[in-house]
Image (cartoon, rainbow, N blue to C red; front, side):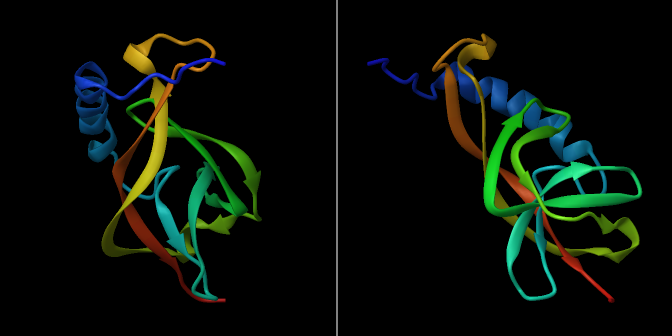
Length: 123
């Protein structure tokens, strides 16, 4: 059995560097949260420019590369961007990257980053 890598000081430095890029991005980002009209909280999974898709009920895995995230998992139908409003809330979202920035099997380290919370308006 493989031993998992532990998030350490070097990973914390990588996270801090990438977080600067992440926080500089405006608008809804893949990885941010969205409150659906029924009150359920999901995360944005794919951005099409004019619409954005939330994760399906099962969630997904978010890889943090700094200026954004990519998601692996299921998608629900896209929501037009004009229906998305920032609530002003911030919530920690789980994500991962490769330990010390080197890819390989079982090298992922998990952590959280602050994510914006949006809501869907209108019908």
